[in-house]
Length: 137
Length: 137
DNA sequence: TTCATTTCTAGAGTTAACTCGAAGTCTATA
DNA sequence: TATAGACTTCGAGTTAACTCTAGAAATGAA
Image (cartoon, rainbow over all chains, first blue to last red; front, side, top):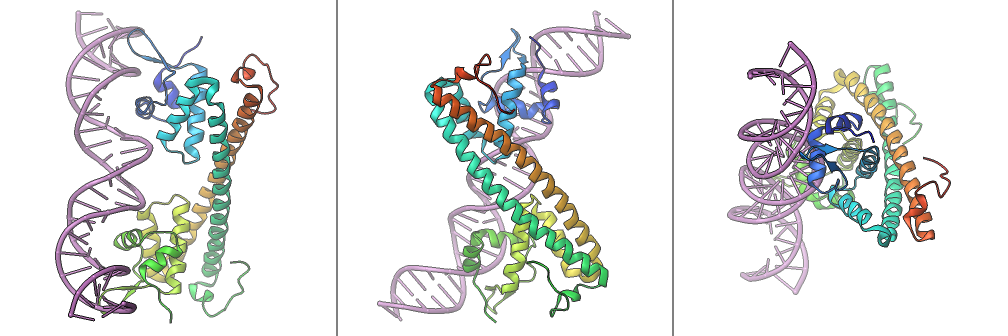
């Protein structure tokens, strides 16, 4: 079975080897095998697991909570409910993050328009005293 | 003109007074007026400006960069182009954040399905050796 | 008037997530 | 055989963004 070195994995996941060792130190990678000399050997399935970890990080989950999930995975079927609940909770969180980010986008777009019209007229004063019609707010 | 105390503003924006003072210390609020005794007096327009600051923070912009923008605002029309460019750049950044977050959502949804089916059958083994058809990946 | 509450500043402390340096080992090539 | 480069651990250092403490001063209610 093909294995990968820490720097190969780091490159693939756009992380550094330092970061991967830090994750290991924090208990996120109990499944990684080692050579007799202690060098980490990453399998394809380990890279997949790291992608899940990156996914959870992307939802803003702190590393200590991700570790709980990893521990549940090691404990087997008795923790299926916790793991399901966790992902359902994450889903709700990402939904509200998307909502928030869409609101942010609307405001940013409004500002783009605001500065575009200001640039066109040469001054921000165009937006004072109702000198221009505002299409949205 | 109605004014607000620091704790009133903190409450409205879901921040703490500590955080607002920290923003002020970092130069994000050069426009806030003070009483003769030094107490901050927030106007409606100050709250609006703080909402823009929160919006920029929501895009992941660090406070030092937000300060640059605040400084440009104080400099007047000569910085309109920089400010326009900045918001256009933020727009591109939020677009890619939305894209990323949508991908994250897909993976999370997949995991919800994965654990739902595992729970239904009582074991995660259902997902080993093609025992179940995977609708997406 | 006394007591609680709120404000202020300066500066110290906290936390998460890296990020790196030092010192040592192992392997592959010149 | 030596020497460059990748790997290891341990522990220290960094950074951003708060978060709080201390001590002083003002304000408002009982």
